[in-house]
Amino acid sequence: AQSVTQPDIHITVSEGASLELRCNYSYGATPYLFWYVQSPGQGLQLLLKYFSGDTLVQGIKGFEAEFKRSQSSFNLRKPSVHWSDAAEYFCAVGDFNNAGNMLTFGGGTRLMVKP
Amino acid sequence: DTGVSQNPRHKITKRGQNVTFRCDPISEHNRLYWYRQTLGQGPEFLTYFQNEAQLEKSRLLSDRFSAERPKGSFSTLEIQRTEQGDSAMYLCASKASQTGELFFGEGSRLTVL
Image 1 (cartoon, each protein chain N blue to C red):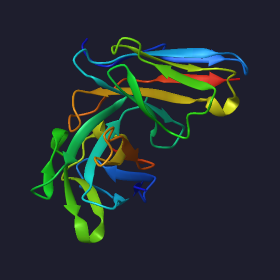
Image 2: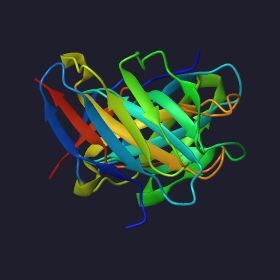
Image 3: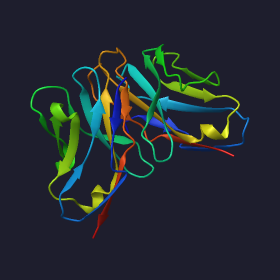
Image 4: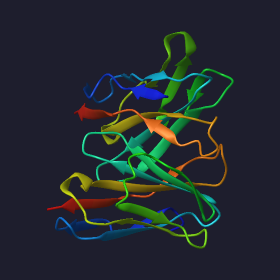
């Protein structure tokens, strides 16, 4: 069965600093990987996804993520964090061997941004 | 607004009561998903529809839970005889194809007293 681990429950960074959120997955085949962001009281918004090809994926809001098969990781990065980036971030793996291809989510990382 | 719509946004009920949530997906999306999210956790898959057919159910979906999508458009999720452990955010999501982007609604938050 697939699983996703986000080792950091909370991260605090200063505005303008760089950010890296960690994600490790367990999946038997080539994974389909996603990062979502959730603001308080809101649904989830897709930041970026990896299906195949280039292992460095660009997303919205200046985010990028790198797929590293050897490390089973898909870490999310941003070079300069803005106060509006404060939110909860979820990594997810998709099971496309299953027709429904439902997603399995990690537990999330809550990002706080200091002024 | 052409996004995924869920209502009610908040529901407070007493233990033992029945509750129903509604999800209106993006109109051209034939795939509809229900997830449950408890405080401090990531969403967990509950069930999935392709058009009106319910094709998969998680073991999290006990006998007290039932979901329908009668005409392949909107969906309802009913919880009978609610328990305090049912308190959670219930998220609906939809997409147009197997590899399409999954769009989430803002969720329906259930509090069982």
